[in-house]
Amino acid sequence: MNKTLQLLGLARRAGKILYGEEILNQFREGKIQIVFLASDISAKSRERILKKCSYYQTPFIDTFTTEELSGAVGKRNVRSLALTDRGFAENVLKEGGSVHGESTKK
Image 1 (cartoon, rainbow, N blue to C red):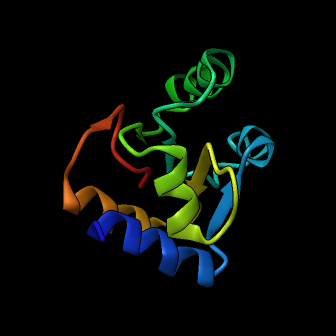
Image 2: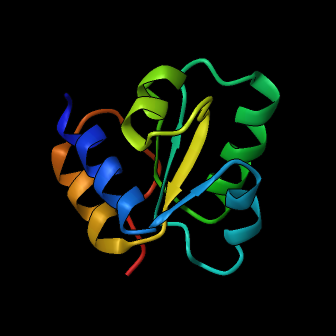
């Protein structure tokens, strides 16, 4: 399994992940460190989340499928999730991959 996906599993067990609509509601609070979008998410959902990522200068990763994200966190049909912990987000960024947007907040 990919190291980034393993980190997502650890973050889920630590309670440091938000899903779906929860993400949109928490940007303003400054809790979102990095966003994951499934590569097969709907265009409308993608656009809504990416607008927030752009506005709040939040990095995002969109290379994993719904199946991969769902398997990593042990839930069904996960099309979007966000890490709320800076430590987990920094580890994800260290792994590299296709990260878009700004780096995590200081």
